[in-house]
Image (cartoon, rainbow, N blue to C red; front, top):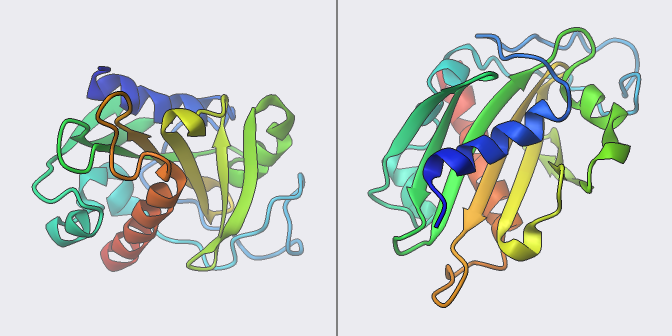
Length: 202
């Protein structure tokens, strides 16, 4: 079985592949001008979230109560430093839920965020638009499509230049996770909880 660090690296790889640059302490707010889409067709974020605190302490994004709703009660978050900034992972692969959840913030320089992801969409094996989450544009995005292997990356544009990626890895094999076929659903649920936490910390 892979280590939590490798799973965390998976989320970072998804974002670095977009060429979005490095993470900064605060989200760069979209100004809401220039129409409803960015240069490369991504939806604009007209009510950007301030993730100044959350992006530096991503392990605060899931409370004990929120972890319980994901079936991961008692799981502790582990923060790690990466080239794109701090990330946090909750590893319950050997536990009841059989899940591993990682949050990564990525901020782009210039036309970053979802605009950069849209610009490079032809280079991704997985690029699938999703219904907005709390009115923020969302999609599934990863260099490779590993959903059938129990892995999914759910991306939300929280400003015109910043994205939050929630990566879920499910336990597979002889004793698969109870929701092994639902990694994207769990990723969306976790991202929803994270957005609520970001609002509360702003």
